[in-house]
Length: 80
Image (tube, rainbow, N blue to C red; front, side, top):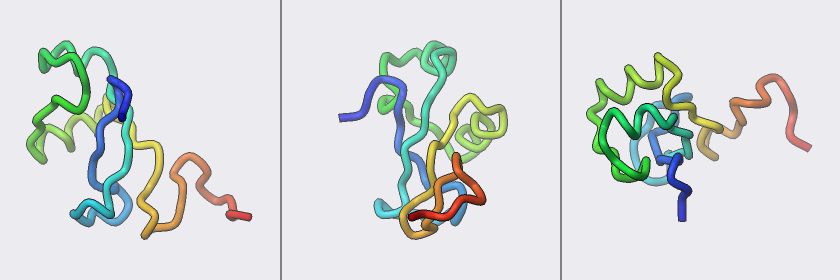
């Protein structure tokens, strides 16, 4: 189960759709308040709203999907 600030969104690296390309992303409290929801997984965002929140860094994806094979927090590092 995801915590109240986590939502699943499409990978921002490959932009593919489908369950296998979803990644966890953190949602700020002000977004939950703005959309009047208790939990991030209750958000119903259009593509435009999601893109705006990502651009404003109010939603922060932590990783890329396993198909991209990289972790956005460790760019430039090799996996062991």
